[in-house]
Image 1 (cartoon, rainbow, N blue to C red):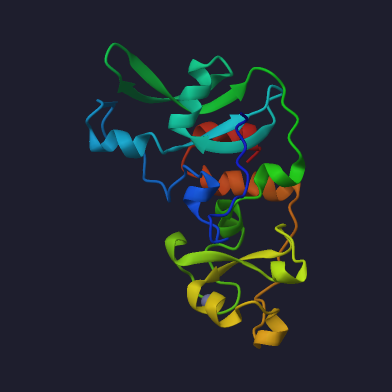
Image 2 (cartoon, helix red, strand yellow; image 1 turned 90 degrees about the vertical axis):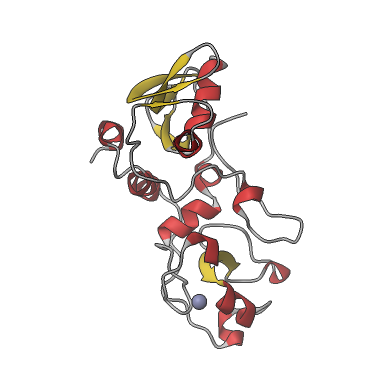
Length: 215
Ligand SMILES: [Zn+2]
């Protein structure tokens, strides 16, 4: 259990949103209508809207999707701190949709693993291939190990960058120097500042997140 997502790879060793279990899409604007039934197409995207997750101490620790947040609430693991003015209806009940939830029991989450995900690396790099410096939609980007794993390169913030498929193919199993490629900039390590910055980028439309993220 736990609200944090860990980086993962598919069977061919590539990073994919599915393998990473990521539920966050590029995300749509706030729901236009105030109510969504089970069959509504809007409901599906609403359930993917980002929810800020706070530790028991109110420290922001993660971003998850509405669907996952509601499961944590139903299990009694978390409670809502802020709600949207929107409801989803199941057979018997109307459920308010959370915007910010808080875990009821304190959970120790290591600084690195808490935020290392494909989604967050793409956010840090602003969806820009770090070799050709062009901006792509998330679906057209992969993660590149700057020092290849075959050379002992690790899956860390300092060794992973957003990379388009074309550059990824031409780089292959080589270092940037060997492939004649240059990094747009040295990948930054994860800090508390990075963490807050990423959550702000994800939640920029949601005013309810502000007081927890200090902006
Ligand atoms: Zn590229």
